Image 1 (tube, rainbow, N blue to C red):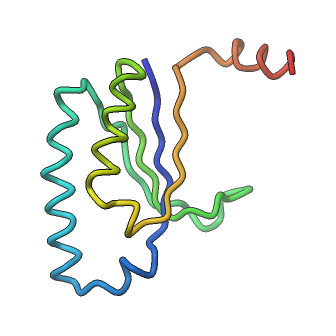
Image 2 (cartoon, rainbow, N blue to C red):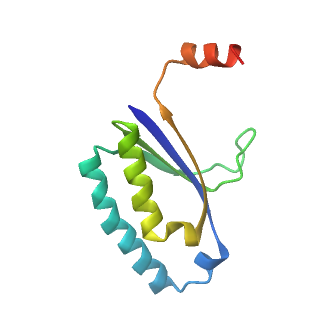
Length: 111
């Protein structure tokens, strides 16, 4: 299983759109997201980053997903690229196979 986290902020190109244009784009995204179910994707949650979190990452919005394998992650990324999302949002992603905290710490120790 893989976790995937999207972290993003609105670009000036998003802010320049009218409300009807934004709604139209989000409808397109909602339609494209129907492609997630066949991938075995699960949306774990979405949130707005707290302003007062310690060592805050400079992103406002987050979404977390679980995927069955790396191929599903890559298929999802292709859907996002094809939607035009990156034209409107500055985004950073994180992905990796779910592991134990002990294994992750062991990896850090081996550096």
